[in-house]
Image (cartoon, rainbow, N blue to C red; front, side):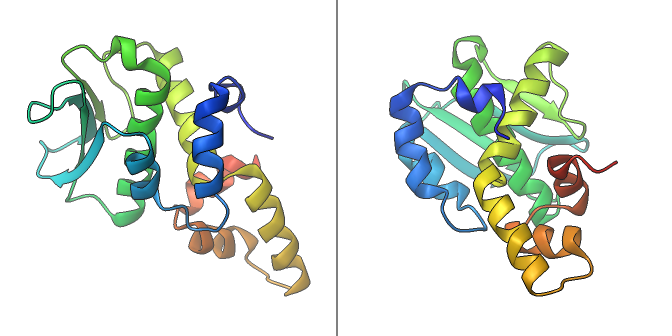
Length: 167
């Protein structure tokens, strides 16, 4: 099931994103490129900071997402998706920037952080694709479905468990 954040995105955004989300792992760089005005870079960020989004000083009217280059590749993917979610949901609240720590907490409310996390999960692990790959895992008689899906979607097992509603 998709989140209310995904379901609440404007139709033009959904039409732009949906064709980019048909095969795992989802290419977040293509999503960022499709949003026109979002640039993503890996950077050395202070310890404990996973990512940030702020106005792009090199391109007025655009936004720059920085992801901590010292984090694992899968954490970086979730961070990029989380910051893209802030762009899609909270652009009017970004101001000078939003910095997210390793627990994806920022100066925004916990509600807005939870919204960004839910939309990030939708971007990385689209419901329809996850269902499709669960069926493939069953037909292949995969024993570790969570591991299989996390590898296929290039996300952490913890993120996949949350997506599947497993505690």
